[in-house]
Structures are given as structure tokens and as C-alpha cells.
Amino acid sequence: MSFTIAIIGRPNVGKSTLFNRLVGQKLALVDDEPGVTRDRREGSARLGDLEFTVIDTAGLDEGAKGSLTARMQEQTEAAIGLADALMFVIDARAGLTPNDRAFADFARRANKPVVLVANKSEGKHGEIGAMESYALGLGDPVQISAEHGEGMSDLYDALAALMPEPAEAREEFDDDDIVSDEDLAQRPIRVAIVGRPNAGKSTLINHLLGEERLLTSAEAGTTRDSISVEITWQGRDFRVFDTAGLRRRSRIEEKLEKLSVADALRAVRFAEVVVMMMDAQNRFEEQDLRIADLIEREGRAIVLAVNKWDLMERKPHLISALRRDADHWLPQVKGVPIVAVSGLLGEGIDRLMTAIQDAYAVWNKRVPTAALNRWFEQAVDANPPPAVSGRRLKLNYITQTKGRPPSFVLFCSRADAVPQSYLRYLTNSLREAFDLPGTPIRITLREKANPFAHKRKRPS
Image (cartoon, rainbow, N blue to C red; front, top):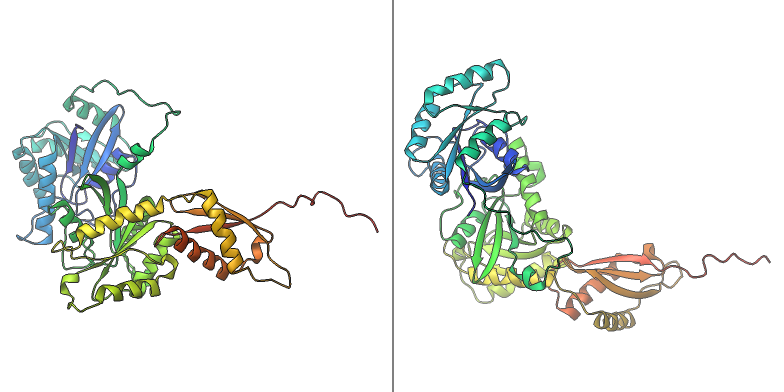
């Protein structure tokens, strides 16, 4: 099992910057505003030849019981409980504060090895603040600048002294090794949960986990970072990303919200299946349609989850009405799976997880070439392409180039003249013929080479 280190300290001392430095990616949001990090975030860290799990935590701060601040501290305490060692970070430029002294006592009571890290130690003021940190009684401070990468060798020495001897390296696979379908089936499905603010995304994930892993609040915008969690559901592994709510661009003014939205969009691009959550009482609003269109453009499998279904008055044929509305408002992903859920009560969770797996299977689907050719002939015979500028369009043949999402190349005589309406006809016909509901379908036009193009025209 990996050695785990939790990064703790008061707000705005550079914990997330250090986290990003150790994992080698900008996974955690960083901003000058204190309290950006709320949920704890785990990552695989590497420093030299040391490999370990690192946990970024919310800044240690005091708050009234039940408040968002108090629940953020509970998340930090949970991270400390999971960790084998702690990195206690202070801001060397600001010097010691009463909160630093109070939380140093808190770190000592955890009864775990502590590495004192004096961040922002560059320059004369940083040197003075680092010397002050001896008063905390946590040993020699490791002076670093997480932003500029200074002092990482000293941090390596401090961490190496805590960590167990590395086990012998496992045998690595050659590049020529073939990954079987069985191995692919065992890999976690990457799922992003997206939607407008306060649609209940974090509440749903907490119910899946069976614990209050992610902070929730009636206040919109509680989630800022895209947090990933590992879930096993009926023997299948999932890696689920909770994301910040997506508002209309015109309403986003604060820099921090822009960073949160950018992080959510990265999660969509990284995902294989995207669950778009809507509020049951305000569904298919303009922003919902924009988000669904974004997911389709990114080529991800999509599942619609209508949350807070427990608040709806139960009427006959309500689910059928949802199906009709989805096909009406989202014709580009006709047949998209739609599930009514209650993240708070856990209603519809089984149906949602089944829909995710079904959407993933469709997204990976490949159509046999012989069946594709038969369909193509029938589709063109039933509805030939229109003539353009008095000239007939000739469609030669079609082939599937890849899945994830299903992508096809159509060879034709004049690619720039094929109308979009005819491509929509072929796309919808493909969906129906080969049972590809809801997944994005890509058809690329390519002109077939003219075998006589190299011959010169005979002189008259």
C-alpha cells in the first residue's frame, strides 16, 4: 500500500501549490483568495525516486459547528486520519501567526511524523520567517518555494527519512505487450458529473460512497475543484469526478469561478461518460442545453440525470414525458439515457449506474463492415443525396475508423457539397440500424481519388 502524506496548515500558505508541484500537474486550483480548497484531494506524487500518495486539504480554520468552515475542517481531520505522515506548511514571508501555533499543537496531537515546511522562503523576509518557525517545536523547517521549485532536494531528504524502504520494482511491461479486452473491462470507467450550480452533484456522489466525502451546502458554488473519487458498484470500478457548477459565461465574473469552470471542462475532456445533472423542477433550461451540446462536441458518452425527483408530484406518464422532452431538446444525441434520481434519498441510483455502463458500451461499439455496407446501400437507395448545382453527388462507401465515440469516414465525389441535412439523415439512420442511442456519432467526408486525374486532356 502506498505511503500517504497529508499537507496541512492554515489557509493561503501554499498547500495546493505544493500539491501541484509534487503530482506534476495543476490539479488543484490555486488563487490568492484564502479558502479556495474545500474538499480533500488525493494525487500520486513523485519526488526524485520517492513515490507516495499526497492529500491536499482545506486550510485549518475555526468555525461554528455545522458551518461550511467546520465541515471543511472535518474533511482535513479525515485526511489526517488516513495519512502516515503530515507536512505542516507555514508562510515564511508572513511569519508565525497565532493560528500556526494552535494548529501545530493540533498536528502534534495527531501522533504522526510531521515535516515542518516553511513555504515562500525565497528572499530575506522568507529567511527570517523560516527561523521563527523553530518556536513551533516541530523540528528543523524545510525551506522551500513551492511556486518556483526551490528547496525540493531538502524536502526529498526529509521525506526519505520517514518513508519505508522501497520494495523491489515490479517487472515492467514491454511496449509490445498487448492489452486484452478482459484487461480493458477491468479498468475503471471515468465518469464526470456536471451541471448547473446546486443541481445536487456532490450529494449524489456522497450517496454512492456511503459517506460525506464531498462538502454539500444549500449555497450554490460549494464545489470548486474537480475532485475524483474511486467507486466500486456491483463489481465494476468507476473513477467519478465531481465538478463545479457551470453557469452562463456572461454571469462569470470572479477569477476563482473562471478557474473552477476551466477545471470542470478539463474533467469533461478526461472523462469517458459524462452524467449531466438537471434539477427536476427546472429541467432543460438554456444552460442545460449548452452543457449537453458541449459534451456532444467533446465526443463523450452522455447520461441525463434528473435530480431531486423526490420533490416532484407523482403523475402518470411523467417518465414518458421526460423521454419526449429529451429527444425534442437534444436531437443531436437522440435516445440519450435519462434517469430520474434523488441524490439525497438514493432513489434511482441503481438505474443510473446501469445507464452509465450501457452508455459506455455503446460509446465503445464497433459495427461489422459487412453489416455497415448493407445498411449504407439501403440508406442511399431509400433517400438518395440531392443534386447540387445540377450535378449528382456520388457516395461511394463508408467505413468505421474507430470507436469512443463511433466514428466513420464516408468516401464521396464532392465532400464540400454534401448538405448537413443529409449527414443528419445518415447519422439518425445509423443510430436506429445499429442501436447507438444517445452517443455522439462522427461522420467525416473524404473525396475518393480520381484515377484519371493524372491524365492530360487531349488537344483538340
